[in-house]
Image (cartoon, rainbow, N blue to C red; front, side, top):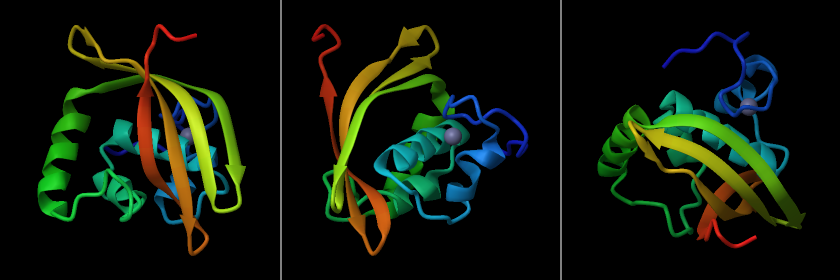
Amino acid sequence: MKLSPNAPCPCHSGAKFKKCCRPLHRGAPAESPVALMRSRYAAYALGDVSYLQLTTDPEGAHYRPDTAAWEIELRHYCARTAFEGLEVREHGEDGDTGWVLFHARLRQGDDDLSFSERSSFRRHDGRWLYHDGAQIDPRTP
Ligand SMILES: [Zn+2]
C-alpha cells in the first residue's frame, strides 16, 4: 500500500509519516527499540512485508528460514487485518538489548484481535531487530 509522505503515520504517533516511520522503512536505522517497534507496526499496516522480515532477528523465535512461505503468510495477515491503534506503555534498554510493552488494537472483520505484548529487541551491527515477544494476559493489570 502506498501512503502519502504527508499522511498521518500508520503507527498512530500523530506525526506525519515522513517525519516518523517512513525514513526507517527506507533504510534509516531505528534510534531505539520503541522506534523500531513503531515502524514495524506501521509496516504491518502498510503491508511492507520485506521490512518486517528485514527487522526480525535471525536468531530470534519469529524468524523463518523459509522466507518465501513466511512472506506469503505475512501478506495474508496484513491484508485481512486493520491496524487501528498502538499504545506504548513501558520500555527500556540496556546496551544492545531492549524491550517494549505495548497494546495494539487490531481487527479482522468483526473480530477484535487486540493484544498486549512485551517485545524484546537486540541490536546487531548498530541496528535494532525484533527478537522475541510474549503476549500479556489482558486481564493482568
Ligand atoms: Zn510512525
